[in-house]
Image (tube, rainbow, N blue to C red; front, side, top):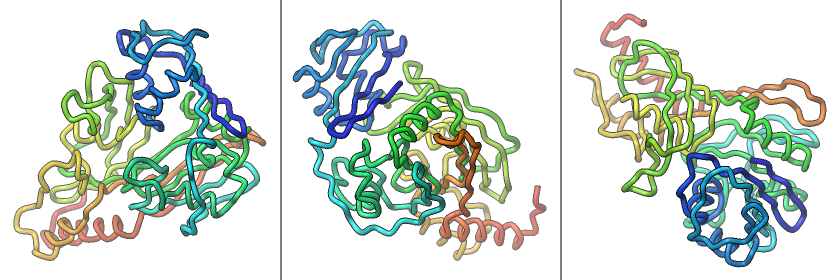
Length: 328
């Protein structure tokens, strides 16, 4: 997918993947352009802002796969995003890039149910010039309750470069997560992800989904849990959370995919309390690597684990020590 931008609108150009053959146009775009609501996409289709192979078609018309689609989104004119004084943890900044450490609980982009108080609103307050950028320079996301490092484009050349790096998988992202269960070894999950066939707000491993590849390795083991390092080849919605649950090692605290909370036998009440009080997915983006859009220099940054995850890990280490389990 290639994204071009202008001051008053985003122009998104994409090729419909072959596996989307048989999808309605509005259905396919809702999956491929999840930044926008299905109703908004349907409106743009009806108003002629979506062209398929240069022709306007109806939202319900079926695709065969391989079509070239152009979407004029008119995001700046349509959205009423206001600057808000939201503290930002700046890791790095120059004229092209802004690298931040996002806390858990902060929504990245306004959406239904979160129309303000988002990272985007904070970015507009921090740098008013970002109002001229598509989505205030946001090119990728972290879930609301996932903490860690993100990059924001401050220039159009940076935005174009970062989107291309995401597509070609040259922008690297590494995460740490605490999962339920004691992993014996690392590995790779190569399983397509799409909307859950019944619960549409959930994602799932489905044959009709989009390619999703996750690499993982064990960083530490506890009595009933593991600390796992994860790297992504693809960037599907909830990818790590879905893939870890798929291989039966769901992320601790995940309210959607986590399942029943597991506790090791004979653990202390204080440890049980720590587990019950951890109310978000224990997932943190700790490292980001990319090619600088202006200098072509390879750059990378790391941020420490969020404090709540550090406390969770310390409690697991203490439980292991109290039961004299050898570190493996």
